[in-house]
Length: 182
Length: 182
DNA sequence: ACCTGAACACCGTTCAAGT
DNA sequence: ACCTGAACACCGTTCAAGT
Image 1 (tube, rainbow over the protein chains, first blue to last red):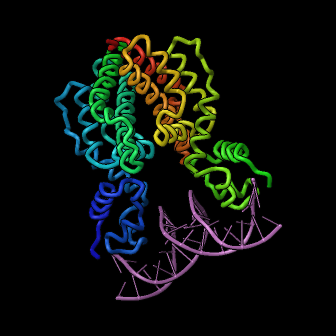
Image 2 (cartoon, each protein chain N blue to C red):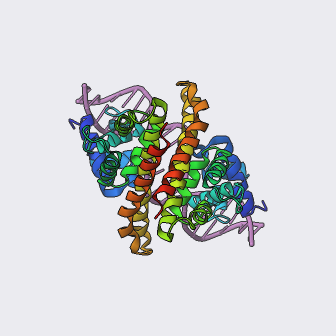
Image 3 (spheres, rainbow over the protein chains, first blue to last red):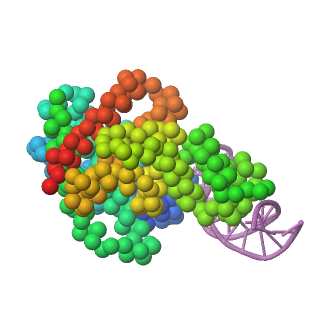
């Protein structure tokens, strides 16, 4: 079926977009690609490696703002990238846990903090901000899915609040990190 | 077999402690309790509800420091509770996503921020800190498991760094939240 | 090189039927 | 009331064998 690694990852992304992480299985993916499950393992080592590949793509879609000196801007860019695909934050979180340091948002933010902080603290600072962004967006996306499935409308105020809640958190963390700088 | 809900949750906790979240299945749990899988569903609605129950127990083991005015102390207490059982942070994170607001760490921290912040911000502040703690400990516990299974010793410096890294993050966030207070 | 067939070792959940 | 038997509808992964 002239399948290759890129097409497998493409298919997986499409599936993630449509069904979410819970609906993304190797068997379903194989079926959609017109192939038997075993065939996928000729192109990809495991489902976990496939998820790391997807995570890389998600983060690569964020602007490579080498010019940006602003950690606030970087946080916003990463959030947008995560929001661009269903369960994006969860996928990236998994990838970060599975292959620590393999992804880029750390590297980018690390550079931003490297001048204001000693190396050890710069690492901590970057991780602190990354964790906030990942946690925030994961909650955001999970809530969206809970609302859509449970039909529990909750308070509709929440949706409007998210942007300012995110800005509030980023501001607090970034300014806090600056203040704590040694 | 005179089984009841409490014993099911007890068994699940024990299993979590021994095998981790990946090794905790309803079928294995049933086997260990000397019962067939279907029997569990007479006592517990689903695996997800069971996990929420476990999460509640984990957080209840944290000191109810009503007296504490210090968010830093509360963060430390929550961290200790999460660390007391394998994959504790992951279980609590799931429970928080599945039943938002059902757990207590939010409530406790919320009260701490309620005097320095307007209600909306107090909510955001509490969530920001909770997210940091959960993310930090999840990473901490995942890394421990990766190291133990992969035998990839990494740099052994990491283990010694975690305490100060946690303190650094908490300090930055708490002082940042105070500074941003309206 | 690339894929199928077919299996292995699992899952969570449901539900009639037994006691 | 509490549990078993047995099924339903799935998983991820492996690997001989085919082409």
